[in-house]
Image (cartoon, rainbow, N blue to C red; front, top):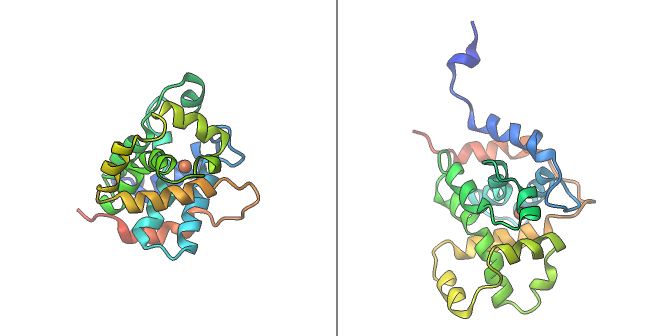
Length: 191
Ligand code: FE
């Protein structure tokens, strides 16, 4: 009997496969792999004492890079925004609630916001992130920044963004995906 043919796919198995497979590829010219970057972001959120949903958002914030035919490399080389934040949030929405998906959705907007709202933030961006900022629309205008601040998920998205920026350290040791499985399991929507 083949149990795999009967059981629906476990979302955590599917996520684990992404981290171990496509995720081990280069990340937009950064010094860490895509999976390493996301694991670091999750670990930074955990070390900061963030609530479980926010740790999950940090861990999963770039899964949109794995979805669809436009990859991160296309984004870098083709000068087009692949809207990975929205793709990722929509895809995660089949398993997780808005407290996980919305910071993912807004993490690119949060970069545009922080570059407008905080003097010196732009200088923290990696070279690749400066490039993508340009194709993502550049820093927000003052009016856009005010509108962003008013969104219910803005503060969480800004927190994820700050970990995102710091999670590109090739020297930093991080736990593997398995470390986060119980936390993710506790957040799954049971239908
Ligand atoms: Fe990221």
